[in-house]
Image (cartoon, rainbow, N blue to C red; front, top):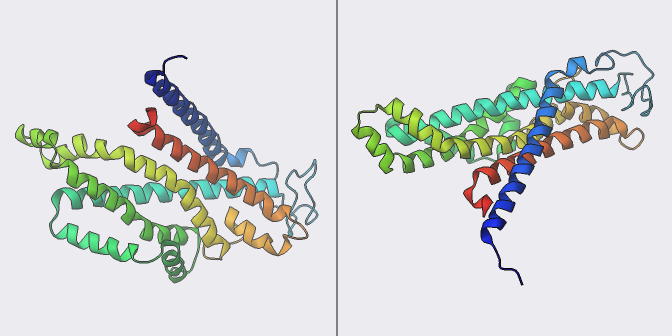
Length: 282
């Protein structure tokens, strides 16, 4: 019987993680490319009411048409563009705000730490989506109102994560050495703190892409997000939900696009986490 070689096993595991990471990076890149250049991929204008209503999928309309005679495939591409790009902006904003707040609170402490952490405690005391529903309703709905509501309840997660890591790192020997040689607080933060928290923040942000896309779609489905005639996957499913039994393609098309996009971002997040985790190669 051949001897067990742990080095070969670790190398094989690492190669598998790398392969998954590359695969899902390619899929995510294709998804983002389709979202950014969606206007060049539309077979018809997304809002043009040119065709018979509720035509089933066929050669002319591969996803069928909706009740207003609009081509569903064009609308799905437009909805994917809206969902993906708005989610990117939302996740980037809450990542940047939460990271900045966490670094300031963790490194400097003081009154800023007390105030920001109490605000984050209040935000985290309520179920996230329920709080977002209330805030979006107060803002009278709309896509960016929904995004602002989700931002308000989501940034504390990043602030708490970064603050806890900053509290650990600022007592580390290499940070103490940086202080001894005369580095200022901004230099220490930029050179030593942020690079060491970037991996965890990146994984959290990529995993949040799928969750935030679902929550944005959920708010739109409930009428608190994108407003008709704007194409957004959640609002499209809401518009067609009464036709699910008679014309299921009106709901299943946008639902399949949402499922595919969320799955890609979730699987990419898992792959990034495994790649950055040293234990992933063991």
